Image (cartoon, rainbow, N blue to C red; front, side, top):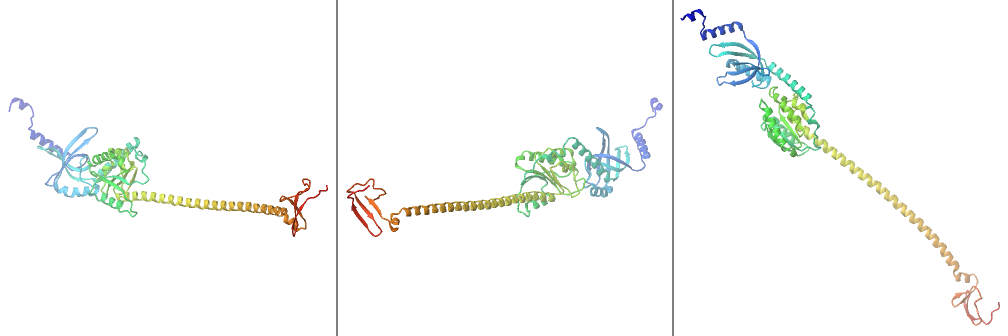
Length: 395
């Protein structure tokens, strides 16, 4: 030992770290509850689960590795999944019961023995409320609802997973509807759960938007699942895309009791994919019924107008017949009067009364002023005609 070493208290690295370990073990003799965010998760073939836990507040504040030994993970994993609907994932906020452990070789780590799923679910609910408040402040909540859905919507772009039971149920109910209505659907596939789901759904929405004139509406479908399975539908960026989409967006996500942020900003939301299919069929059925009612009313109106016009034509016919009858009667009366005058002027009527008629050149004479001696006359009597010659005229 040198003189300098004798004057100073020098520790070997292992001795120093051993002292640190002893202090930590004394300071944390029992497991403690720790809240953190998962930034990395890896399931090892041996059955162990290796995680990296972090805490951030505008920047990284703390970071520590954590381990769930296989003996604990065998029970913790299915329990957490049954409560939240999914496995431990990156970005998830968790509350874990952990033993602080320090190793001279591997530094500080946490040995997790329990996880509280209610904390994770509660954290998501808090984040969801903040997302809703932000969308309200930005005026996004009713934006998509201002668009117009066609009276008879038949062409739909569908975002879902082709193998999903919810999508298959939707297609069956829509295309095998009781009315025989026909619909056009085109599937745009996307991941419908997990951290990658929002980006995947937005990519599918971009593809639909490029062909917006080919569709009447966009449908987003996802069957039921646990709370964590459906948390992607509370994503802020996804909600903004739905609110600002150029077509009406109709959602059918989850179970009857589920209600997500994208449901709030969509044109309309229906609880399940099957219910959405029934809703669309009903929209067309109601409009079809309305059109049939209009057609029936028009037919009645036409019939009523035809009956009214027919009655009008009959009245007109009767008036014309009556007018013609009056004119005919008037003409007949005039003809009778004329006949009477003609008969009254008939010379034979005069002769039959005992009178005689004097004719000159076949014309009736009313005066002798124009007669001259020598003129020949005819005297018509009831029983004979006498031709005479004037010898003398006495005036």
